[in-house]
Length: 477
Length: 97
Image 1 (cartoon, rainbow over the protein chains, first blue to last red):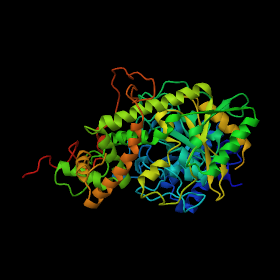
Image 2: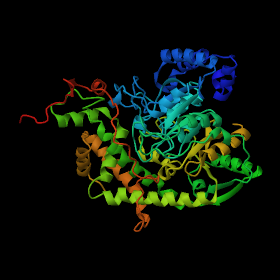
Image 3: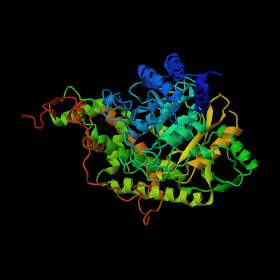
Image 4: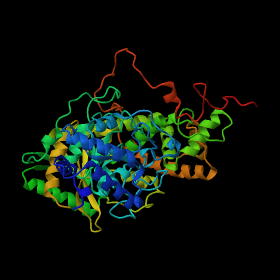
């Protein structure tokens, strides 16, 4: 097995025993990145910085002073800022933007001696489900280059799946970590809203956005979450809740756990092969002593509408800041201030971002606010109440992550509504602020990965790791 | 409800975006399709339901009224498309008519 296919926990043993050096490891990932450039997973790669840092971390490991993530080669979605290197958000409007500070998650990864290898591609401003709307071109799925990797964290998912890094950070507003994890066959977690600081994450929809890890294994994911979670005074929506040792939830039994199967997630529109794969996991959990109960989330069918009203409203407001005045792209042709705003924005944003700004501006505009925006926030309450009610009865919910496996490039690009509908199983989790994890659990007849989604109570990521680790250990795929 | 191209033009002005005639026509069609889908929400009676703006049970987050070092003027201006004498520089606000 190639070293870059190993999980971090295995690599770390080799690093600690001096059977492997960080320097060698970084070279291997960089070699893979060059070999698989056609995936277009990265926007920026820090070859020299990563090599230099590898030498430092090798010294630290030799000195017995190394942090929790020493030598873990991590990629960062390009909407999370790092001091001194470009953060583009996959947009022309930020193509020349170099942030003057580090996001809190970057600081925390560096404190634990991770090696940051590059910035990954994404749908422009994380708005999309296929990583096709980036100004830097589409990212491809390593399992089939004619298919999308999912989105919007498609660069991160593709990079982890292809061995172009050991782990990665993404952001998830409506499924943007879980759906690409599912399409690329990797583990992806959206933590509870407020679990991880959003300081330094370029805002899309502030009440829904959350940063989370993508990795090859559940245990690597638990380790990454432990490193980046926790209170941050720089983000006033970051919760002051203690961070448990997520590793202690691994290699536990599932006997006695109650697992909910929401019937609405298994109805029309779900690929029968995916249905079968999820049922297999449920049967196997039942054999191992978990109790499976059917539950109902009756308002699921309203989630997409509520989500796209709230997300576009918040986006239209957050993206007002891109005005050509203080940073980012400014149109050359503007004769006065108003023209500078309109031309810089019209030339700087791509079509999907403009569409969402327009929709968001509309639902917030006078005369439509109550009918759309306020209504959507009320429906959000109903959706949240549904989850609260069923999560009182069970420890965890199991659903598919996506109704289909990876679709073809350009298949949905011209039909925004079809693209939005592909988020049906993930958006409700963001509306309710819950933690959820996608785990690869099978492959379909074309060899494409199938993802299973676990959803737990707020701040109960430990439960997700416990069940996902168990399933991972008992299902080969 | 149905949206007219005139309405799309008004929203574009509010959003400080401009579009070609073809783009506007395209948007009008897509908007109508998406908004029809969103009107599914009207099936639900929400008369007595409180809106959720935020899922966490958080109070206002306050900090001490103490100063701390922020970005320097140079750092703050580093990304400016144009700056002059320590200020952001923009085109004239008023055009000579």
